[in-house]
Image (cartoon, rainbow, N blue to C red):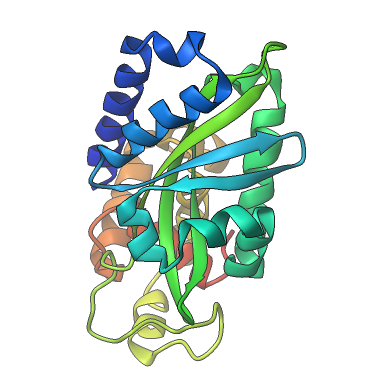
Length: 241
């Protein structure tokens, strides 16, 4: 799934690069072109208007509007307040990391990915999002970002419904799986959740990359998840990041 949306993001930006109008027309036309690109995707795609210390949800495509149960008027009117209102406090650090990341000139053409715990129609859901700059201001700062998201809620085994609050009322089945982990496996899980490579984790823990990969395999088996994204979900649930 994650590879699929990465490919989708590349395809979207190929369309942007191939459409010279985006870089030569006025702001309104640029937005219209970006909206068409968003609407052509089957994923949850949005346009973010970026400013120094905040961003606004400027546009959601049809699939995003349906998934997040909002209207175009809602997201535009509420701006960054919508982000604050729907994001769990424990995920707000990830929001501020995105802002800090794109305020750094070094990252102004770089992809940013993160996981968010969001309140959607009074139900907490996990989202994985990949973000990339789309349009720049004359001074080189970012004007618009495009974000593609997917749900992570199908990545844990559906034997029990997940708790609706982090660290509260966790179901026995999830706790039992987590308790199977060794202290070393918990360390590796925490570092995986920080999106470090096997080599980077190996350097931190003074072990070999092969040993890290073995720990990763055991984590997936013990926690009964399908990928490293499922591992990240456990790490957040149990306060490892």
